Length: 303
Length: 127
Image 1 (cartoon, chains in turn cyan, brown):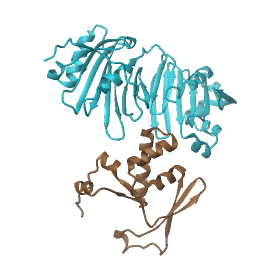
Image 2: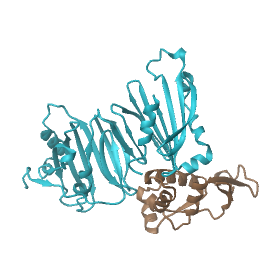
Image 3: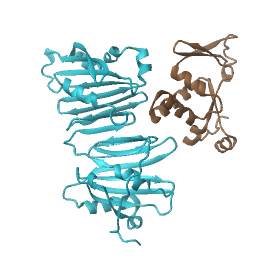
Image 4: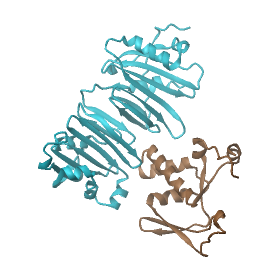
């Protein structure tokens, strides 16, 4: 039985064309373009993600916050046992991760007779979260060690956070938590909140088809009933973000709803057409600066 | 017939199936897409109850994306290939292309506009 303290350094990651960034709840991973998230559950302190291509499941991720008093190495060992069993966990070896990614504990189990699952467990130094990555290996290809793990990174909750799933990517300011998401074909939406502040990022594509149905201004029009009751439409102006043309509209809270302090005083909607990606981006924020800042970040990573 | 087993289709079977247009369907170009017309036939169970008038037809409007998928339903192209072609043509994410294509094909099949051809060995396994 190989010693549990055997350490292996990661090889330099192979550069594979056709990759995309998958970033969710603070952690990020570069995955092949063929893979997409099939299941996303949980929040920052714990959850699961399942990645699959058209044919089959390819990888799974699980993350959970652990107590500060817990020993990272022991937590990783227990998680590995829970994932692959006691006997297989004894064959797991420590894996030296790139210094830039800062992982306190790192264990890798490689299936001895594929097809099977290669499993990696680590504790992030940045957030203290335990992260598990399971790769469904059909043959001995070391994809987990060489291609996936070198790109795994974690971001603390008090820093700007990148989000990237399917075709929608953006960067939210520090402190914003995901409250809602809707991934329908051609219409992707994520909603965030930070106290009273609200932020919604929506992407519609292909834009050519969407704009053939109605012009950009009309995409600002539909709103939930509550919004139109509490807010009155303010001025509408042209908007330009990085040479993308669009419109922005302000909605101001009506005076009689001054006691609705949980709702922002104003909401600014920005809608721009990105001809390069053929997408319409609509950002709704509780201030113009917020909406414009986030709108600039949409689509930056996977363009 | 009452207790006949439903075919047990796996995901792989669904993606390997080859949609085929209804031979009785007529297609004509329309603004931004196409129009598909099929003759209406009375269901077997209801023939003694009512019949459609002779020559009755039903028309479906397809947009450009729908027309593209319709054109791919030639009995030789698999569902998987249609998804990839759609993703490439409209610069869509594969998952978005998959969800929308499968939903559209399901709708076409429910309306009798397409059938699904499968390899003989897969068909015998499914039953």
